[in-house]
Length: 353
Image (cartoon, rainbow, N blue to C red; front, top):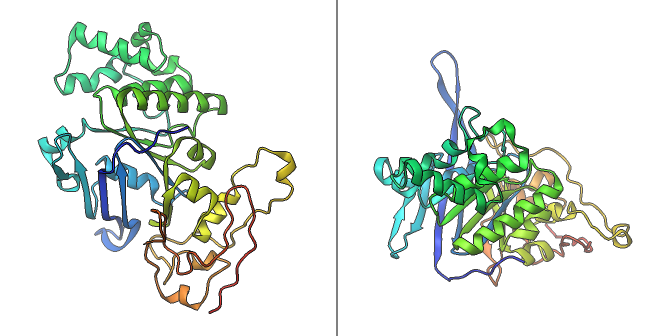
């Protein structure tokens, strides 16, 4: 069971975030368009919660996470971070020494435990690199701190002299987690942190993340496509489609009473562990292809694949609106459709044009 949100004050407020990548052609590399990887996204992350970002591959969830940690520079919008003293700063505008100082508070766990570690650096150098860079510890003191970090993530301290090739995938990810918590951050962006691991190792890693969260009072932004994992670890969930936020709510709201047809399709893909109930479930199968973020359709981006779409959906772009109790949806007919949750099929509603 995940921890509840510990405070009503947001740790991070994202407003109108956009990340557009230029499309360049020709010898002169002229810009002929843009890939709208993240397009006008707004949400808040509260201190002490695990906030999930979900969606299909290419929906913009990883780009959003990397922008929040300032690995990527946003094209537009603001990312307001609340410091420990209560003051606020827009980290989207930080540069130089100010940005380096901020990186102590927000760290990242990467998806691939094999490519995220430098094969030429020992575990001591990998985990202790940030301790040296920020002047926290050097020499013997750094070794002692790295040993403590390895013990926290379930690895033996003597492993610090080894190199990444000597470890399994799960152990490499634990090294990545140790590196992420080395500076005692307040927020960790976990980008598909368990997707490359075996199922049994996934469970161990998720339990480790929950243990570290409670011990160090961490806040997580958990980027994932595996909804079973999201249901286990997240407090609130945001659903993205082609760079836009289409639904936002608590874990139970999104999984049990979705308000957007795309979320309904995602929920129908969640495996049902009970064979006696599995036979009665019908999968929502989406037709067509995911919209091109460089040339998205008019109106609602999801309308070419939506079985509830009307003429209004083809011309008018829906806005994310609160439908009550913090549950928001970017659908013209949110609240009117009888959508099914993760383990139950509802009778499809008919929307009149």
